Image (cartoon, rainbow, N blue to C red; front, side, top):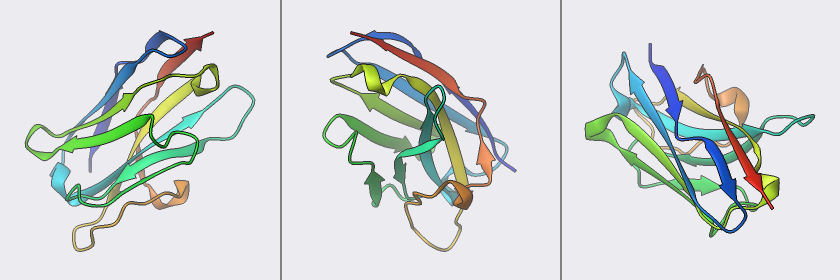
Length: 127
């Protein structure tokens, strides 16, 4: 099974940028659809963005469209989330997730579709 470790969280300013990374191990990265979710204090975890195992199909939440860019580097077993034009409402714990998808090439956007999760990384955006 795949293990996921997020990094790159921290403190950002409104209008600024942060870049999150998710490094995987234990199973071929190219067989997994990948996604990012986030959970703000007192709120349920929500979908941010996802990408198919080939990288050809992506989805993103309306709240982050045109601000966040999701990329994957299969040769490096790494998923990145470039977050630009940050807003205070982006403050949350961000989770990387993986879904084994060896035959398909889907970008999954629903939490229950993912079996594997990272431990999360905190992103705090000040106004």
